[in-house]
Image (cartoon, rainbow, N blue to C red; front, side):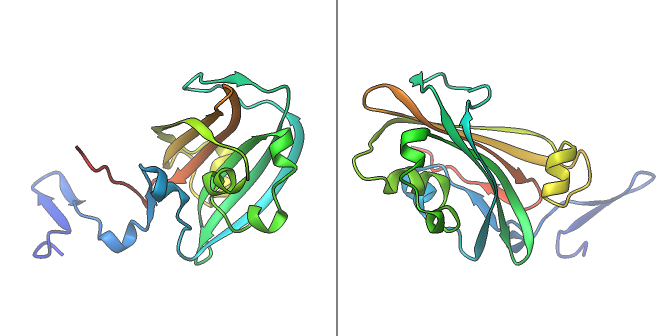
Length: 183
């Protein structure tokens, strides 16, 4: 393993993993609009809960005016039986009524938004922070407590300045990759 640059040995300190094979990092968190709309190869989406009359939690980018009510969908994404994303997706109630159940189980959250006829997301933001899994997240993603995770929040406002969409997602830190194209 040392000859393949997978580990590094240090006298009196121990042996450390220094490289993670790319095939292990199979969940790319997209950074552009077209990438965010692409389906996740081999991903299965479970709808764990649906609640009406909700308000999204704290929002990093305060864009748009909040609607009176949102519908929250709690979803878990898995690949090959391994959960990699736990998400709370909030759609303005009027828009949520237009989403087909089949689409909730097959499309990414922003793909759901983009598929709604007559709705144009005029301002969309994404924020990524790094943290650790709390008890609920650890259980849902089948991880040990305090395992590294990536928190991703996406928000969208329409042309009228209404906040129509918020999603709070938690990705497993051991399978996520974030790529940026720099200009």
